[in-house]
Every structure is written in C-alpha cells, then in structure tokens.
Length: 402
Image (cartoon, rainbow, N blue to C red; front, side, top):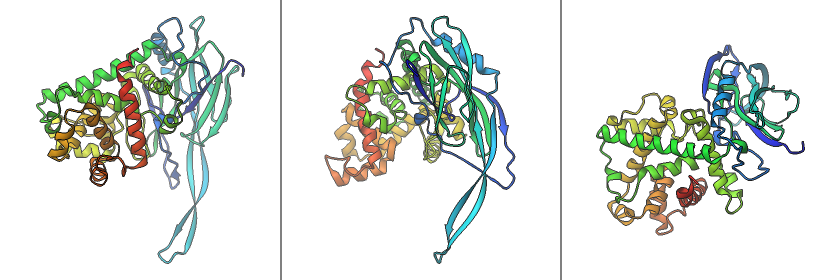
C-alpha cells in the first residue's frame, strides 16, 4: 500500500486497563504456553525520521484512545491442536506420544485516529487476518497469543491504543489495553514524559530506601559523583532494546531505539512493560528474575519489597528499589582492591553493574580473575552485547530529553 505505515503486533504486551479474566477449562489437554518477550512484540519498519511531529501534543489523544477501548471486547477463539512429543527411556528407546493443546487465538481492536480531524475509529483484526476496510493484515508467525501480524495503515493515521488477550497465568487469560509504538506518537513531548516518569520512579525508590534506613554498604563506598539512579535509568532503557536490532543498527541510529522505549513508557506510564516476560522468567520494566528478587527480599528485609514477585515487578517504584538493592549486593561482592580501583570511575562502575545485572556478579568476577584488564573476555556473548548497549546509551544519556 503506497504511503502506508507498517506496524508489527504481537498479542503479549504490557497493558493499561485490565478487563475481567477469561478462564479456560483445563481437563486433560495441555494448554499451549508461549514466552512473552515484550521488547520483541512491537517493531516498526521505519519509513521516515523517528519523531514525526503531529502539530499537537498527542498524549491527550492517546488517553482518549485508551478510554475508547476500555469497555469494548476484542474477543478470541479457542481451538484444539495435536502435536507429538518425543522422549527416550534410560536405555535410549524412543517413545512418542500425542498430546492435545488448547490454543487461544486472540483478536485485536485498534483505536485509530485521523490526524487531520482527530476523530477516533475502531479497527478490528481477527486471528485469520480479517480487518476493517482500508487496513491490510498479514500474519507473519505464531498460532496463539504469540502470533505476530503485520498491519498496514494509511497515512495521516495514528494507532492510539490496542486491545487484545494476553496470558495472566498458566491457564488464565485477560483482555488488556495498551499503546504500542509507532512513529506518529514518537514526539519530543512523549519521550520527555517517558524520561521524566522513569527518573521520578527511580528517585522515589531511592528516597524510600533512605526513609526505611536500609543500609546500602556497597553503594556507600562509591564516589559522591556516582549516582545509582543514573545507572538504573540506563539499564531500564537497554533492557528493552532488542540485541539483534541494536547490532544491526546503523551508526548514529541507536538513539531511535532509545526513543522507542521512552515513547512506550511515556504513553503507558505506570503500566509500561507490565506484562513483559523473558524466556528466563524476568519480568517488568526492570526485568528481574524470581530467584534474584526473592534473594533480595531475604537479604534486605527492611527494604519492604512486595512479597508477590509478579506484583513487585509491575510496581515500578518497588522494582526500581529491587534494581538498586541488586546494585548494592553486587558491589558488596567485590574485593576491597577492585572496589578501590574503580569506585571513583563512573563508567567503570556502570559497566560492572550492567554486566552483573545481566549475568550475575559471580560470572563477572570469574571473568575478571581470568582476563585481568580485559575483564569481559570470558563473559557470555549476550552480556558482551548488553555492555555495548550500556556503553552507547550511557554516552547518550545527557541528550535523552532533547
């Protein structure tokens, strides 16, 4: 379609408004479960410069779009599909059995605005690709809540919000409303709102730790010019920059990936990345895994971390506290010599904390012992890419509100 924008939609996104749950009967079938990787759920094939200005502050329109979908129902269908599972006995004998999966196939409702008259209309997409006239849909992959669709929509239109079904736990689903990324909403006002929101949550988290008089032995050893909230801000952004897109990004274009994250945060604020789950089980804006979260609760009882892991990760102030407690814990793992060597080097501290955040302080220290000055040589490849992301975004951090 000439002059169209291309939006990739995946059903498992962070949400804004929670509708009543859809509970599926369990019986003896296996309910198909797919991983939810939020940073891979919405991507856009750029057709123009990021940050296309609409001539007005679109944040108010986004709120109207979210409200427009609040009481509607996207709907879904459930089908049974069979698949073979192969296993082997202790003697190596091959065994096959057939299981039945119940696959939920969600529909989508889009709140779409004409940027000329600012009127909102509804666009419906089914799992089979049926769509409102004027919009084209191509199914790219997946069969259930992990299905991905490519949606082409006309010029002078903006997708303000989307409603679909996501998994709430192993056998339950719920409809949610959220605002996906698109260049039409990627404006200075939106990015600034996202940056301000992140900064506020981190400052509130740090203040709460001070109010509770939580002893942060590791952070207290850092130089006065090193701010843990600044490091946490960068990590909260790079956690949602896809490593493949980062590696394939043209020189000077990484800022556009950062803008995508800030735009999503600005549009969704306290529910941004609320339903983001990695293959390792990390959740939420700060992508913390269950074992780490529970360990921090035990190590810092005065911090008052929420007992429930999922609730704790979707509460941004609580999750921000957990991230800074993890910083403190990782710093206390350092030997006095290593701490002394880097305590006044802001970038060195940030790189260490980023590496430890991604793969654990134990692996970082082992790599440092084996590699010396080239301390990253034995880190996992994923962590090396993570550090490259940190390095680039760290250098960009002062210009994020421009």
